[in-house]
Length: 288
Image (cartoon, rainbow, N blue to C red; front, side):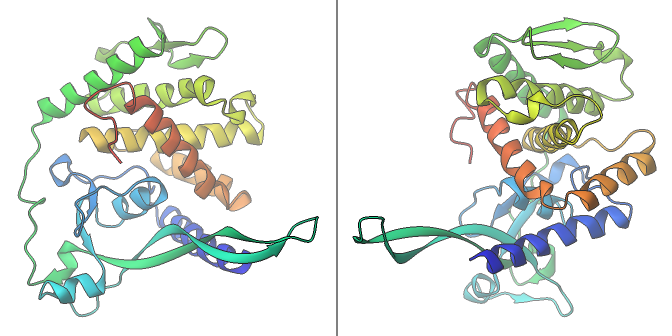
């Protein structure tokens, strides 16, 4: 199990590092909002966690199919296309003997993966998702609704100030007014970042104890960055890195080289934080 886990993690981490080394931040995608989220072509459900980040940074939204699913639907993979790995946890049964010598069956979690192809890599299957165009005003309304439900439901205080930050002791966020941001997308990306931080109280996230300059602080920032991007994509908002993109990417590349397993763990915690925020919105419950 340990070898398998290490192998799958190495595949995912190396993919993330390769993108950063190539000047692409996996969780800051330039794809337009009309493409929506990556979804399973067979079930229509959106991917989540590290799979969401990995697929978004490759082809963006739209349907993804396995080779067998493509064959079943009468399509074919375009020559030269490379698939993308989707990871999942599987459980295998194993006989164990407890301290009293009693034999029992335990379910052991094992990390697995399968390969999928984006609809643009497939011939003979028509995309239903990519024909749809999301109205930007509807995307903003959705974001505002999610934000308002969460703020009201979690008793989070939001004040206007000269910097953007979360105050754990007061469960309060300070935000620079929207008009001072370079774009509407950048405003929501920043606000979602701080909202992810604020879920640390409800979820009892240990990384909230970090202080500036230490690894725990950097890890919490990664959780907030990933969670912010997930929320933006869910709403149909796609911010890019506005300034100092080279420095931004270089900073995260250095962090993840030193702590390669962070990306998997941070994606899981970001997923929990996003689910926490969405749980307050009646329309978003059970989104995944």
